[in-house]
Image (tube, rainbow, N blue to C red; front, side, top):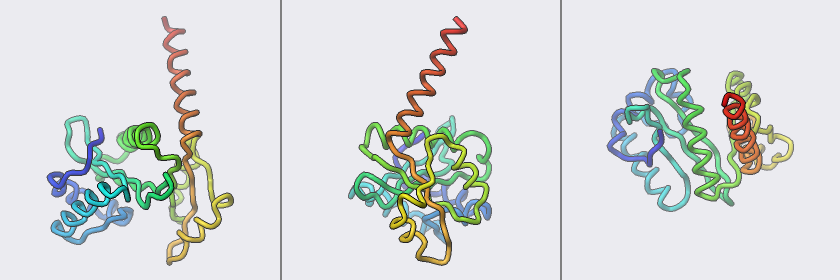
Length: 185
C-alpha cells in the first residue's frame, strides 16, 4: 500500500498529478515532468534530513497512484498532505493509505501530532475531516499556528490528530472487531 518515495515512480505520478481535478490540491506542484523529478529528488533528500516523511501510495498491484506526506516536521508534529490520481478517487485508497501512514508515523517514527489545514471554501474536505472521530478542530487551541498558516491569500481551518486520540480510536475499533468475531463464533 505504501512505500518510500522513489524517482522511478515519478513518471506515473506526474501523469496522475497533472489532472485538473487533482493538480490544484497538490502541495508540491510541478509544471513539467523534469520539474516533478527534481521535486521528488528534493523530497527524498529532505526525508533523509528529517524535514518530512513521504510515501508513495500504491494500488493492490504495486502501481503508484498518489502520495502521502508529513511536511514541516517540528517537535514531533507536521502537516499532512495527500493526493490520489483521479482514476482512484472514491475507491477506499485514501483511507487505507492514511491508516497505514498514521500507524507508521505514530507507532514507528515517534510523531505525536498531525495537523490538517483545509481551505475554508473546501466544504467537502471540511465535512469529511469533522466526521473522523479522532480529528479535532484546532482553530481555538492552536490560534498561533492558525494565524501562521493564514498569512497568505487562502484562509484555512486547522485540524489536529493527536497520537493519543488516534491510539484510543485504534484500540476501540480493534476491540469492536474482535467482539464482533467472538459473537459470530
